[in-house]
Length: 69
Image 1: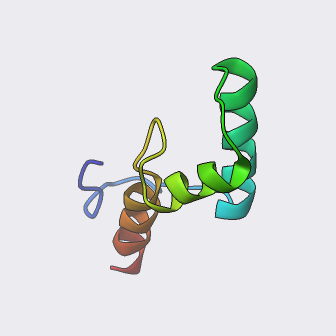
Image 2: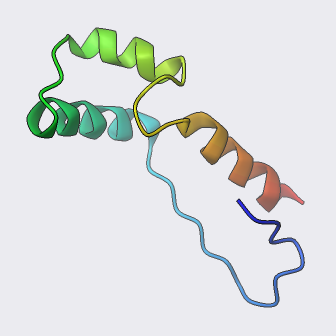
């Protein structure tokens, strides 16, 4: 993500509740990409930041650090 600390305009960042995100993410990958495996297995992968199209945690936590400054 680019450095936005001196950005002249307001930046609005939204993120979903991780519980909601992982459920939607799991259903998307099972329906669209034919993912095989249990929801519990997928949660383990998600929590370890190894889910496809990740890393989710670095993205969300990185934005929180920016907004705290």
